[in-house]
Length: 376
Image (cartoon, rainbow, N blue to C red; front, top):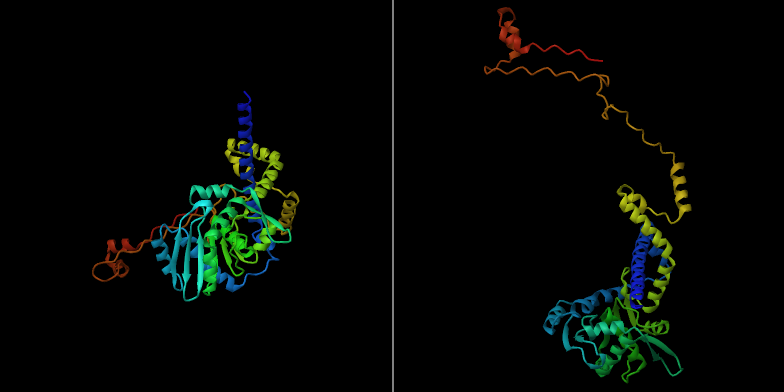
């Protein structure tokens, strides 16, 4: 008997959370529209990215996207031929036991570069890794330091190092620069793979390995992230939710939505009332958050002294009257053009000759019509 009330309360809470999230998104979007330069002001203190780093990220983007999600090795090899350089596919490994993710290994023999390419979420096991967001403790050194990482991503990173760690050491001995590239889930795994190799947590150690990560999700706490800054470069889109989603951000979002519960209920009542009265639909959507700012804007507009447009007089014509006559005067009819005779002489000349000879037809052709008297 207690199951139904509990399920009803959970459904009601989920409904309020969803509606509150909707109104929060609309409010943030409106605020961004009112101040388009807000994001630029927020990141004004950030350092500019070097042009060489941008060029490297642009050139590596096809590896982490199109090639990472290739259906088979033949499709990946065709995509590699389109890149600048002499890229060739060396190894294609599917998902394995112990959480080992699928990956590709491509090398550029001319530039002496090697790239381990890890795709994002594709299978059910990848979804399990995404949902395993419970933090796991990592020992970061002999000085008893430790950090916390995403359990699912760290498990895949450790499994990948166990398989490819010796290959990384061999490539570096042969003079290759090794880079791990990934997108979404693969990006988080790449960042943690570099950390595991630099610390030597699974045996193989490399201090020169690098990671290029696109849309990297939250894979560790602040301590882990500061260590990853030494080898990982992350690209985050301004509106991408994946890099911003974590257990902590979800908790903060829930607290913020619960704090706005009363205002959300008021918004719902206003919108329902507006839907009942379609004429006030637009007016009900105009919610002014800062009343003082709105009053200041109104005073500023009033200080400009712009006269209000006059209402048109009923019955008056909107077009200005033509020059030479009053507004109520009708336009005069234009005189008809005389017909042209087939003999080459105008009807006007015939009329002049026929005045004395009694040519009634010619004189009638050129006689103008009487002008109508204007009506006042």
